[in-house]
Length: 220
Image 1 (tube, rainbow, N blue to C red):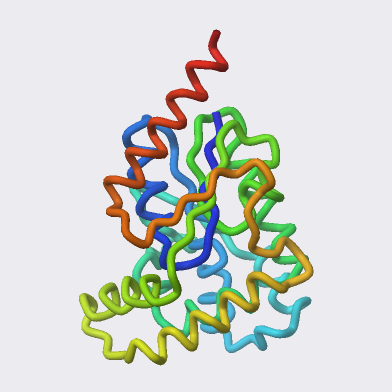
Image 2 (tube, rainbow, N blue to C red):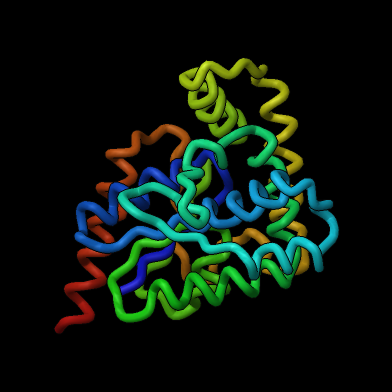
C-alpha cells in the first residue's frame, strides 16, 4: 500500500508522514530531503544551480540513502546540513530541472517497490505514484507556515526575521507551482487538509482514520 502526502513547506507533511508511517508500520520516504541533498552536494562543489546538465550529472553520481530517519550522502550523515537556509532555497532551483526529477523519480519508485510506504513531497500523488491507494495534500496559511519555520530555526540558534522567511517562502512557492516539470498541485483525487489550526497529532489521527477505512474497503 502506498500513501502519498504532498504540499508546500511548513504544512507539517514531513512530521505527519513520519509519524503516520510509524503508526501504520510502513516505511517512510522523505523525497524533499532527496532534492535538498542534491542541492547540498552542488553547493559543496560550487556548481551553478541553473546549469541543468551539470546538476543532472552530479545527481547521477550521488548515492542517497535513508537509515533510522537519517539522510546519508554516501557515508556522510547530511540530515542537519541539508536543513540550512541556503540549501532550503537552493532545493527548489535544482528541483525545477527535468533531468534531476527524472533521476530521483526513478529512485523513489525503486525504493517503493514491494513495500508499504508513506511518502511525502510535492509530486508524489500526481507524478511519482499516480495509482497510490491514498493521496493527501496538506496546506496552511503562509503566515503559519513561516512561523513554524521560524520556530524551527530559532531552536537551532539561527536568527532570521519572519518577514524574510515569508519572502523566501513566497519565492519558493512560486518556483514550485510554476515549474514546467511536475508543478506543485493537488492530485485530482487527493484529500486536501488545511493544517493551519491543527496539531500534528490531530492531522496524523485524521489521516490514519482515512487510511484505515481505505484499507478495510480494499480488503473486502
